[in-house]
Image (cartoon, rainbow, N blue to C red; front, side):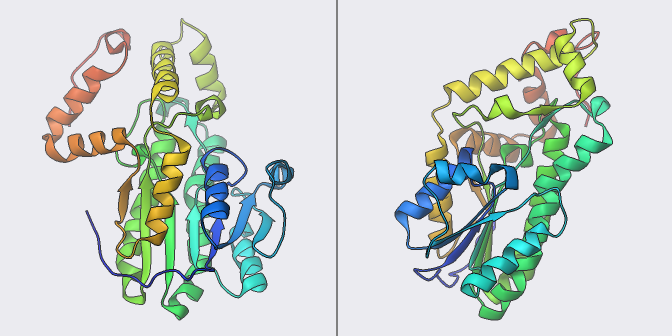
Length: 306
């Protein structure tokens, strides 16, 4: 686990840019930053979601700048960083939170939806990082924190594109950790597992995955039905909350020697230990046989091969 420091501490009035701030973890984190710190906040969301800020009690003022940012449109991330720098002269911390989940086996992916997932979960955070880095390097101070997922350390069946996007952003941030460390800029990936929320109800499908999920005659129907039920059950029953993950993000922002990877929920710690300590073949064997109703997947269950 990569760790270094100490890094320069953020100033009390640090400018923090947070994406995806109108719902879910992003909204909880925006509230916590507003309540528990003196930071100045740049909160972004799609233009169609901006009215939610007023509903949640946020408005443009001396501590808050509200901006539209559509992660699927190249250039909007750079524009958001430029607007923050025009208002307050700098961005001290970037929190890449906006994300998109897609439920589809590899065979059911289509180009449009795959590209959308990669745009939101990978290319948009990369663009924001590129835009914020020059100022951070010049000041020799900064924090770049990206909300990843257990799906960035281990792949989940029926969530191939989501896992691919999270693996990609983890690789980029790990490279960045080495590259930017000499300038005193800390890079962290916060990896939550299942969080008690209804976010699973917003998971998107491709036309093929939607058809297979609803038609028992389809070859992958059991995959979707079993995994969907498991995910819904775990997200309703887990003790991990958005508030707990938000507290982890705040601690990471304030830490003088933050980890590169921060496990944010108990199940993330469990899966990390399994991945690190079990032999690879045994690891995949255990996870395969733990899949729900796996004996009904396809013509017959088989041992995975490395």
